[in-house]
Image (cartoon, rainbow, N blue to C red; front, side):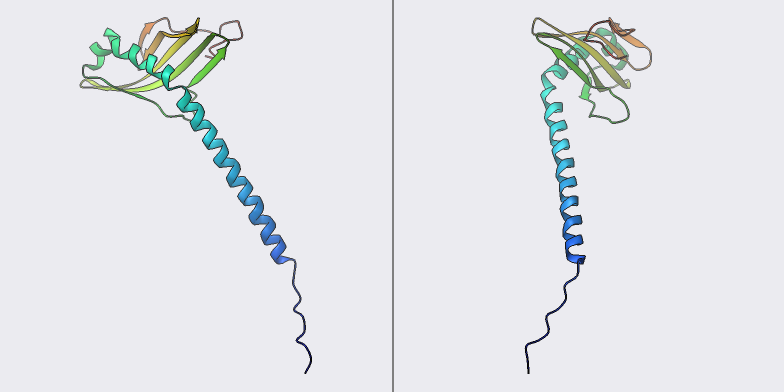
Length: 149
């Protein structure tokens, strides 16, 4: 009786390990991108609070939807770009979307904000299809801090 014959090992396990490794890298990349998007989204919370306060204090909004008014920032959406923040030194601009709900109904809103000398200020909003408050940008500004509308 001699030693048992050595089993032949195929290339299949190396193919499996290679595919599993590549799949793991892809999943890790997606997780990293999702974490970065969440970090950037949460980093704009102070700006979004300025826009929510602007909507809450606007008499046109409370007249249209009633009080108490519930204002919720819209989550990031892939189809519609509602959130945009651009910064350059102590200047910048932002566009943030909200969902509004009051006793008289609900509406979607977009608030435009500007950062001048380090302070964010809401400059205008569009609530629903027809209500405009303040200065709603109509066209692209011709500098590096455009609205992209």
